[in-house]
Each structure stands twice: as C-alpha cells, then as structure tokens.
Amino acid sequence: MAELTSLKNIGKEIERKLKSVGITTAEELKKIGSQEAFVMLKSRYSNLCLVHLYTLEGAVSGVDYNRLPEDVKQNLKKFKESEEKL
Image (cartoon, rainbow, N blue to C red):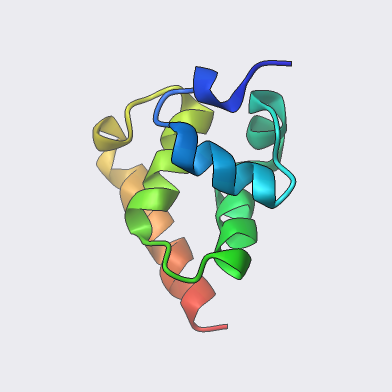
C-alpha cells in the first residue's frame, strides 16, 4: 500500500484531509476517483475549491494538476458546478 504523498500533487495537508474522510492509501484514492473523493472531502471541508478537484484528478492520473488537459479541466469544472446545485 503506497502512501498518499507518493502521488503527484498530494502534500501533507491534503493527505491529512483525505485520511480524515477514510481515504488512507494511494490505491484507495485511485479506486475511488477524483470526483468521489472531492465529494467526500467537500462534505467535511466546505471551503474546497476547483483547484482541489484538479489536484485530486492530477494525483489519480499521475499528472501535475496545472498540466491537466483543457477538456479534463472543463469536465471537472462542470462536475463541481453540478455538485454545488445539489
């Protein structure tokens, strides 16, 4: 089982937050996926922004969050906006 911080974009603070919602390994985060992990985090930390979602997607995809393809960013933005309407 790999540490969360072994993934790109995951530092100590986001690791702490992920662990607080029950995501404790890199494998768990990859299995759950960025969007579900974001929903889990958002239920506990209401101040999360779109960059957090990009960070999670980058971690799952193995890419620096600021290098995500534009279409992926747009899909994540739409997802976040749809979540806010619920």
